[in-house]
Image: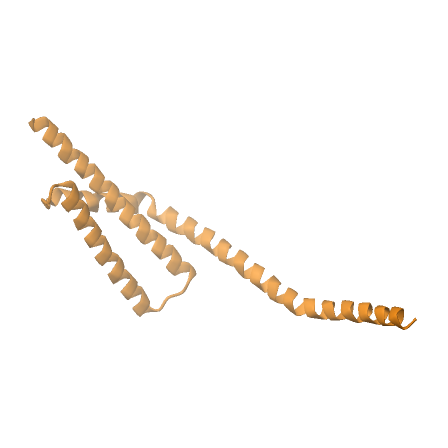
Length: 144
């Protein structure tokens, strides 16, 4: 009986580690977005405050739901360990790679719209030329 309870608490600790790592991963995605799209200092502060308040509520809900309403310090420690391990092992690569990928996507979208804008300037001129040739040809055809 005691062994199963210890195993359950260990399982909860591992889940808390995973939750902590996922929270920091989501924060890294926010950091990637900030690197690609420039923000003002006040915008960053508001984003951080909202993010961490939502994380605190989510972590509280996780602990409340998984541990029958009992808030335990080792679950907070587990989430902190997950955040720390993820930050040390993966964060740098996720932010660098994500930033490079998102910049490539934004560049491709920008090129598409730039070429579309150029094409929209060129198409009316082309269309006007086609209409003039077609109308001139038809006028001669109708006149004869």
